[in-house]
Amino acid sequence: MSDSPSGDDTYIRRFGFRRFTGVRQNRLYRIIAVAWFNLIEAIRRSGFTKMLLVFMFFSILIQDVLIIVISWFLPFTGLPITINELFRDAYADSVLGMVSLVNRITVLELGFMPFNISAIGISFIWLLLMAIVGGGLIADDRLHQTTEVYFSRISRLEYTIGKLMSLMLFSAVVVVLPSIIQYFLLSYGLETDLLVNIDLMFWGIGFTLLAAFLLSLLILALSSFTKRRAVATLSFFIAAIVLSSFYSAIGWSQSESLILLLDFVGAIALLGAMALGYESLDVNGRTIIFNNGIGVEGPMVLAVVLIVLMLGIVALMLTLFRRDS
Amino acid sequence: MPIIRIEEASKQYGEVVAISRFNMSVKGGSITGFVGPNGAGKTTTIRVVTGLTKPDSGSVSVFGENPFDNVGIKERIGYVSEHDDLYPWATVRESVKMLAQISMPRQPGLIDAIDRAIEEVGMTKFAERKVSALSKGMKQRTKIAAALTHAPSLLVLDEPLSGLDPLGRRRIMDLLRRLNREKQVTILISSHVLEELEHLASRITLIHRGQTIAEGDPDRIRKLLYQYPHEIQFKSLAEDTKRIASGLVEIKGLVKSLTFMEQSDELLECRIVTPQPELFYDELVRLAVERKAPIIQLDTLSESVERLFEFLVS
Image (cartoon, rainbow over all chains, first blue to last red):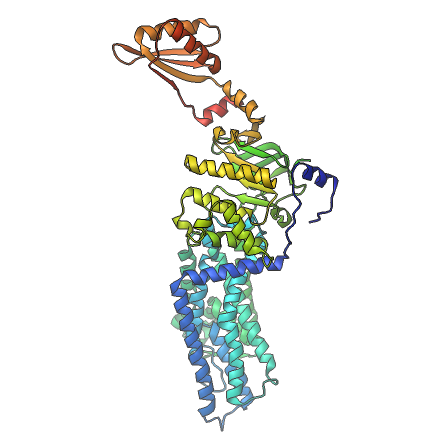
């Protein structure tokens, strides 16, 4: 907004209007301020969140120690794949396991994969943390009517991005950073060249960020529908667990692998695997071929993720961007 | 051009018409009172001015621009809503800091600005106290402090005095007066009680059913409201009451209706509706003295704001 003196401005100032003298901050700073404040408050307020964070830290630590120990002591001679291929599969498996709620994405070549033993725990805690932290982000504002205070200072878009960013920052510390650390640890353990597989590290960052973005959007959309943080938290977490367990409970035959698509969280993991070029995955002991025309097709997985993304955006738009909100 | 100009603005929530072809203007440097009964459209108008909502039709300009979702305009407005919109778990300082950081993150002197704003509203002693442990008045002052950190040119307050005790009310009014006088902050303040604002505001707008029904300085509004038929009751010995009442009825146009209510064998109460309350009181005293009829009790029956506004509309 220009402060250049115009006729109107002069008139206004004559009657007491003071020109704005503060330093105007750009949009990014305002968004970061919203994100940072909300993140710190969400963690600071809840003892349970702090406890989970500590627990998650130890889970990651255990996984990292396991990665090194297993890499050193496993007899890798006589494997059907090279060490570099093993590194790529193991890392992908470990990172995918951070998002996937149940242990069902296992590299085919080995028949088993020991590198994602504690990743199951990480994905569980991460989802729980996302539900707890994200559930109240908008619901609390609606309950205490603080959305109005925010909107009196920043735009609705800045508010929404700020809230989304607080969950993204949270995820960056909880999963993105560990995924990067694991890349170096695994590479060190298996003695592979860091630079040869550097694309994998960027994939790890991109995938965890994408997963964090999609899950954040979903939990925020749920949070914007209610004034009770518990409703948003529980509905997100229960939906994630129930849908994830659905396949394990019902999908006992190959022809019913479509049920897997009900699991949105798992679908993100499948999408990540597809991005890496996998054509099939072993899920709970059964091989899921992405493009055989009868199972979980690649475009279907993409469609599931896009539909949830769209629903999340529409839900947020409906509640935060309508003119009376 | 005034700082705030609303022209023919209408806003409807479903079937409910909040404001209808509403007009208002606020001059820079003024304190403008915005008075109306509950549901008159005050909050909607304030939300329109602060850019929180958009009118269905008509135009709104604040500092010459459309304020809806306009961050440039929001930087110049300090807004205090009618709700207790503070996080109960945060302290006073944290509440103020949150908004300050959003408005001016990374700005040098941010902490000073926060401390200054807290000091300005007299909350330094309670800066580390949690919002949940604050009185209503303290919460209001905290909200005002949060609204002041970015040095706004326009302060918009939605019923900031409601629910406050007389001391709390006075403190806030003194604070607003000082802000207006010393810092030239233009103030738009709403209330459903005229008395709260008539000693504070230099201009008052009366709103009812989403429309302006009167506008002017407090004296003019007071005179206008005085035309409203007042219901007054006085009590005396039965004979004295009748003598005074007969004298009042003889004065043309002074009494609109009169009712006697027997209180006991000796006492009689008289209820009178008069369109000229000032003259009524003068005459009542004159007759009581002249006819040697002492009045035991005298009351003005309070009327609801809604009825008062219905009268003004009619």
